[in-house]
Image 1: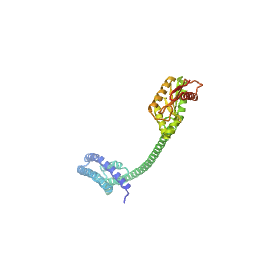
Image 2 (image 1 turned 90 degrees about the vertical axis):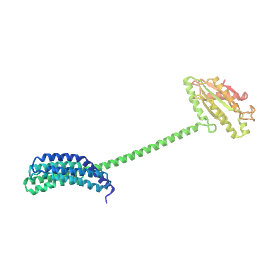
Image 3 (image 1 turned 180 degrees about the vertical axis):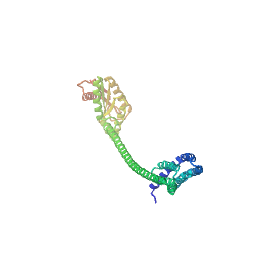
Image 4 (image 1 turned 135 degrees about the vertical axis):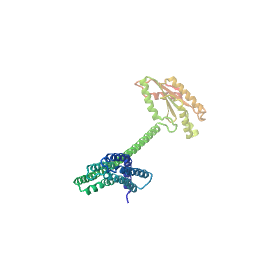
Length: 398
């Protein structure tokens, strides 16, 4: 019982033979016609044209069989046997050719005809490569009739020709062995190359998967880092910037304003009587109030660089780059009025029945002696003045 790999090899070999036979059918007809035309002039007793007609019939029958074979799904071994039979039929026809010349076996014309047939066999054997069965199926029937006729003649020249034919057999055998060895080496190298290629592909796939994994982890880490940074810079209650974010932004904007010789303003605000609000309405209501005012402030941080932040407790801060004192005061007034318009009830406040806020505004065109701390202290002092003056108002740094 042959293995699937062996059956596949037989199938591949039969496909190769089938292709070669289709290719050399017309070639054989042309060579046989030239052979018949040339050697029919040698002897009046020649019956080469009869042979050629028979050869054409065999060639046509072989072609019909090959076409039929291509339309049938035979198993690999049976398919190969039919192909070998077609080769053998053609070989027998060529084996009869020297005898059809009508000359004596040892005659020069016969020897030339035998040589012609041997050349045809060599051409066919080269096409069959290392298939020793196909080579033997072609060589033996094509030359054995001539060998028998030569030996039967008993002529010395005949023996020399037989020796040449034997050497011819040896040459074909060596050629088949070499071709087979070359094919085996080629198949081994091909298998090794396929193995190396498969290993290379596996390594590339593994490296690609590893790279994808690392890139995915890196993306996840960057996203996590971005989320952590955002969370670390956002006040969880109000959803706006926290004190840490504000301090970093203030330092950066102060340095920028110093380089460009531009003003920088800070609005510091504190919700009036917020302790009483918590005592009256509870801490949950206090948290809601802080969140609502925090979101309100974001509407007034309109420009690039503007920042609204929770500074701590009930204190908020707005950073306004490139803003002079009067412009910052106007924005603070807008915010103050907007907080009142929110109409958050606060009946425990002595200032108004709704939530209000006090504002301190400071601005500076910074020089080498200025610092973020000094600017905040100035805004805080103005805020203190606003509270001392009765709350719910905007005070400017003096």
